[in-house]
Length: 548
Image (cartoon, rainbow, N blue to C red; front, side, top):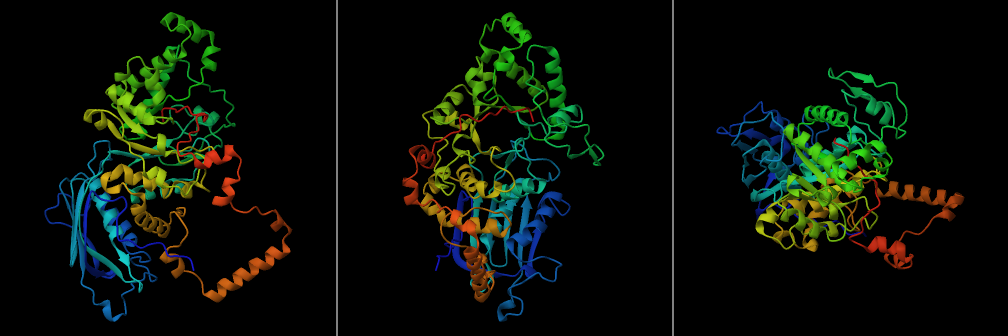
């Protein structure tokens, strides 16, 4: 018999301070209510929280839906069904319910649970959302499927303000529902930044209202877009991308007029305070072949140093971005090539090797840093090895306290060369959740991967129950899986049919045994090194971020 995934009453990511007690209280979804405190500055009509209350009721009580006949209350009809009402009261210190989160948004909250109710206090709606997620993870079921919650006190806030995930939709199309499900899972893990890498060398699928020819000639397919009136219309004519768009010519003024116009549109479409301008792995061959660019290089005194031309071009884009009241992010090469690094706003460190050495260099120059190097999840390697993402220490470099305060967070990256909707979720989760705890929680309290494993295993089961296809961490199963299995006789009949099919199918002779620990030792050295190297980096990927 396979072991059951360990059950641990806990929250992922771990709150800064949490005290749980043995005293517990039964809950019934029919006797549970969300309510605003009388002295809360936000009240009914706060769209963000009103919607969250409806969304979280079935998350707190899996299998229960309000207003549906199949909504199941495990206490209904039981002698123990006389459950006291439980009210979660939400108290807000601010009334803003209509804005968007930004880099300065506060996410702190406090949560106390006692008999008959709980109090969730937060300064902003974003902090309240984090508290609702923690509350939902405190509720659990016993062997009789009765819901319980223990007496609990939590004081919580994020360690880093920037906790992101990069998705690349330029190399493979990701359906909207796949992206939305990723956003849901990010909220469950308390990740707060979605870095959408929309365009790159392979395609330009962003449908610009100002320059529709970009996607007409650069998208993989003439998909339907939404115009200003939210009406669907085809963008035609269309042809497959053929590379004729090419890189921007930095020697002519019209290029900067075009970029100003496009970035203004981006500012209006995307309300976030950051715009990622890219700047990594630039191929200079096209610029070298252009006589106009070579003449401009001579005029500017760049000689044949094209890194200076890149620095000039990127600085011009950063000035345009700043004039639009946006904060620019660039990849680390822009810092490495720039003669005036203090002019940069935020640098994202992505290369392998001694990535903390690069973090030290950037922060010594007084520039803010986002760390991505240790969290490239699409690279070859053992997909079950979540602990290498958990054991990252973002501030383990020699530097002053002022330098370490310039590390604003980190980012999990999933590049799209070999990723689409079929394998995105198990590639991301729960490994991205391991990085999420590193970026949210106190490092001293979360220094042991072995102690974190039971909580992460339970959290992974919770993700599955919420519809996120998170990959397994180890041998075992989740309680809800075996409780929902068909009867044993049905399973045996299914197994018998599979055996009959295998005996009749000639293809079974082509099956290759799975790679076990023993088999892995027999792999060629070049293959084994990919499995074993925790710092393996795909230095050869061709990425050229566009300003979207």
